[in-house]
Length: 311
Length: 148
Length: 124
Image (tube, chains in turn blue, brown, green):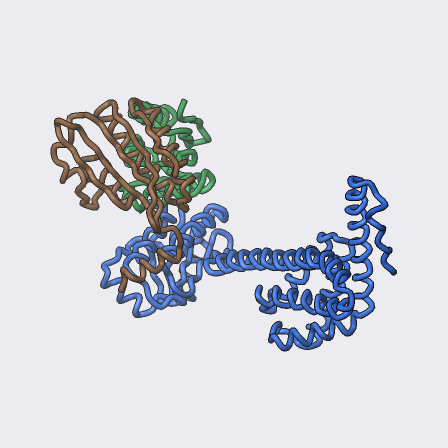
């Protein structure tokens, strides 16, 4: 599309001239943008290749294969040019979110996403320089159209990625919290809480809340706490465990502690922890059998027929 | 930082108010469960002492924070006859019968800091504090440091 | 009224709606002791689910009710202790002998059934 010839300024009244000039300028800008978009689409292949080359040089997107980079690059390029054309960032935001959803699990990081978008901006800017360098005045006008739009695109993609990343991280943390202290219902009224890893006060507090909530929700009468996966335990946590067992008792549930390592057993003895309120069984299997007896799934022994005292 | 809350303690109904205000402040400050209930229970103990033994007094709830902690101060104040044997009042003999029936050893166990001043002239003032580290990481580091 | 009391078969169910004052505790204890005698009830269920705080006073009140009821021939089961309240009671080291507890009303009645059957078998 040819650009319109400038009107002679002297033909107009001053105010009208200014208005006309602004209107003219924005029509002009619009027209320039359309010309720009057409140019970018025509030269899609070379520009995209140039961009992909720059991405490798900058060693970005290392976690992705060349084919993947090519395919994503194609989509990014097309969406970029569409956004330039329409001026609308909504579609771009949607695309950026979807792209983020795809690449975040692959391990792509924020600086990489910003990096590739800025590289694309630069590749396109340089090609504009190359095309319009013969007419600096026109080049300036083209850049005036291009730069704000390109920057808005970079920001949109960057922000979408960061937001998506935060969302994913929160989800993962939540999931890990769930996983790290799961209370499982083994049978009706029988819960098991396997604890794995380091047990500190914060986790112990969370464990207690989850266990007591599960006792209430499942109407559990027996709980098996298995600490096979716990290497060491200190006084604070040992006391916390005892308190958890006692609190469970106040909610009508008996507790069996299983999987004590010999180190933990000795620690508990040395700390003089009061374990009178709970049954301890060395191995999980034995503990589960005892639990089923207590819960009434197997023949109970006569030694504890009522077993419903608060202490 | 929010302001302190004062609850006048003159009757049983005021215990409900004091507990509710304590719980609400603890929740606003961000205490995780079960802390709001622990704080409300400690408040219940000291406020009830005022109602039962003195007849009137007040509970003051004051938030506090420093570089890496946030918390609440509970002050229970009366101008009653005072506790003659303060030692015995806070004595924890673990049988449930200690503490002169004033529930102070228990309240102390629920809170992190506990002080009591009592005399026939100026009555009794119990000051209790419960606090948490701002972030879990800081509290974990502190724990490891204490264990080392 | 802070406590709702009703009868269910051989048992008396008392739901404590809000914190009790000194006077109300004595009233409740008296009421329950009377009812147990009047109706020859063998069991009492005290539901504390509405209490968001159980301090040493309330614990002592419950204990005194349990002991009084025992003297009148009834077992008592406390139900409805909320999770955070349970933690507070334990950390407080409230003396809880000789309280019997269960999670809820159904569990309490099942327990009382077992206990009263046991008594019958023993001839007591």
